[in-house]
Structure formats: structure tokens, C-alpha cells
Image (cartoon, rainbow, N blue to C red; front, side, top):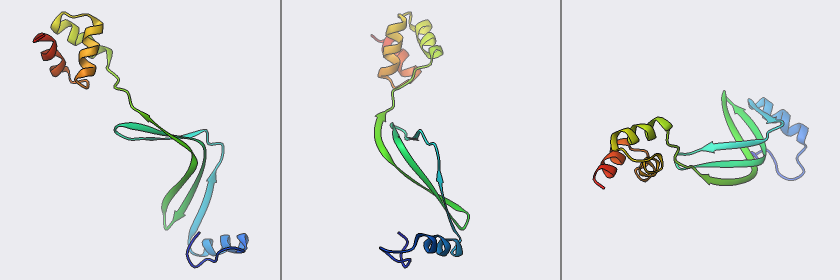
Length: 117
């Protein structure tokens, strides 16, 4: 609710007219399947989402309502990195992949760890 615009019993048409006079435009997006917010450590997935965009003085504000769950990101190791570690250390693909995961994808750290083992 916008302050000063009334509370219970406010006429929705009057509210919309007042918001338009103030330069506020509200639009609801249709047919949203899910919203994904990506952070450094995880993805926040919002299902059954209702998304409303409020435009005020050229700036858009998104309001998202739905069922949210947080999913940790898994480290994805490129096949080229695994191949390089294998070539440099002579270990199996499985060992190279494990070393890269243990080093958070750092090639040099994985190679040093396997070479000193």
C-alpha cells in the first residue's frame, strides 16, 4: 500500500487513477513459470511466481511473490581442465576431476597437489 493513498475500503479504480497521476505505472507479468536469482554461492528459485513491475519516474521495481527455495551451486569443471591436469600429472580422469573439485577449479593448485602426492 502506498502511504497517504488510503487503507481499507479504497476504491481500486480511484487508486489506479491517483497512481497514474503520480506517474506510477503498475503491470503484472503473465504466464511466469519460475524466477531464478543467481548469487555467487547459490540459485534462488521461485516457483508459482506472480511478478509485478512498478515503474516510477523511469525506474522499474520488480515485486516477486511465490514459493522460494535455495539451491547451492555445484562447481562445474570444464572437460578441457580435466584433460590438462591429466596430461600434466599422468593421473586418471577421475583423479584429475577430484583434484580440481578439491581446489575449487584452480588448475595450478590441482596439478601441484597431484604432483606432490
